[in-house]
View 1 (cartoon, helix red, strand yellow):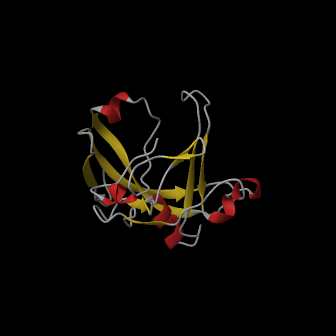
View 2 (cartoon, rainbow, N blue to C red):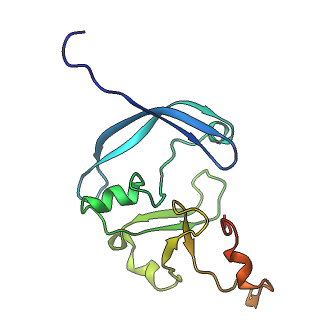
Amino acid sequence: FSGPRLAVCSYERRYQEHSSSEGILVRDVCSIPGLPQAKVGFGCELRETGMIKSQNADGVVGFGSNPSGLVNQLSSQGAIDASFAVCMGEGDGEGGGGALFLGQSSIPATLREPYAWAKIQQSPGNPEFYAVGLRGIELGGGRVNVPWREYERGYGSVVG
């Protein structure tokens, strides 16, 4: 091989449930229908352990509030406004429900009204995580009897 030597930047991530991944960082053009193209950085996995390996995912995308998160990369280049929405649906992963919207303009008008939207904040326990100010939970028309301060401890709660 003759020519300039390419610099390679590697990464290693450890996740909350003790799985890990490592690989190299690359940059490419992200092309999503209806949005302007943007250059984004992402990792190409070379090794995975634990749940991240066994979950059979086609890929993992980062939505953390750090600069390398996908939303921050796209919004810093003007491709979207700094917002996203995840609607979790029912299903077993084989065509089950759910949707991801990048930027407010991508959310169909039919979905804006029937749902409650909450402004996200940085988590006090970990600034890379997002948090929503939670004051209570209602299920089936009845309020769940948990004081709202319970949700302000540690990393908060996970809904899935």
